[in-house]
Length: 314
Length: 207
Length: 103
Image (cartoon, helix red, strand yellow):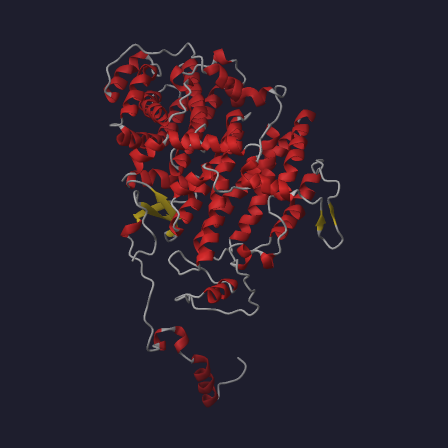
């Protein structure tokens, strides 16, 4: 892969007629230039863009599966409605995202086929099991919080159609965090057993949460940042998550299961180095629930092929 | 409408909403997944509204009865995780429910009649959705077969005096209905799963 | 040439939404649907389930004519606001008239 240089001088190229030149395009996006679907773009940019956005779509779709079971088990009507609405939003996000990918040249059916064949990736957190109602709260509150940090940074993505859908996605995610926090609050102020359910779920989810934003590759070496597909480095996102949420977790009387976690005087959070091998192992399709969930998706995709054939042939 | 019949309506909406919510994430296309989930949520909302007419604690009514005490019709209890059957059930249920709700709008109790009118306004969109799918799939053998299989159950949604209307609208001959009052084997496992988290804490626990 | 690709078997419907009375319709996204009825049923929920829209327009993508280029070869600045040097001329006029100075 060619090493891409960082442009230090802001150079504005008129939007009409982005020159068909990789270096000029790089300067254009790094100066804040926006790219639309019909614009010329370097092959590397297009490929990386599709892969990144497709992974996001896959994650939204796979994220549905751990939460779905709990819709059926929700202990009050209000929680059932709120959780169904949350999961519905994730499906809606997948629809928005796959439309963007399709307009870039990869059909939705191909994305779904690659997903269930194990050829495409999705975020680590959706490879893990959910065990209790405590997980429902932790996922809606903290996993969605970690996601929203990345998603807010994506509002500035150089590829405009993707940046535009992020507005709706971020708006809807904010409801999820409220719902998650409410579920957690009800339990930590409930019975001691309910409090324990939350603590136990937090103990299991903390590792994946710390891995969520990815390994601390420097922004200057991250092609996604150089192309301004991402506008935030991985470590920056993780620090934002810790800064925002560790105090909120602790003020409820919950313990973050990392004895090394502390905030330095200069404001930087220190923590036990996440297991990057585990992350790689999981996202390449070897998580505890990966195979089962992909098989579940595959089953329904195949079972309902006749419906798509009957309905989508215009 | 009697309290028992109202409970039957609420239980129908609760259980069907519960069944329909199971499709969230796995419907045949993403756009339909989103739309179908809204329908499921609306049904739960209707159940909640009717329970609220019958009790100060709608959650208790929804979750804290033993399975045998639910008054839902066998149609909604069936586990139909296959799209042809699911849509067949949606369509049959909407036709039957429209007949039931129309009658309810004339109920002598103002609160009941008023609620029926509200439900009816929301159901208009469910009917549009069901008709749309029915139009698309009516020539598909597996859809027609599913409608025929579910027909006896559909008749059981309504009291016998309203079944003539259902027969006229669906266009199938009347057969022996699978009546409300006994439960299928599918209700018990549904109830188990629906109440397992709630039962894990003492009564009155907050969630 | 259409600006956006047209998938092979099912039309794409562009969705425009009006957020509140008095607002203009704005492009919100798209759904893939075989006809206007499905497009409506699906767009209603994707763009309205939280009450975020008071109205929607659904338009098949291939009904849209895309216009993206203009010729500006002869520098007709009088058609744009930046083509006028009002500030400089006003200053000169005030000086001549003796009306220049703090207001």
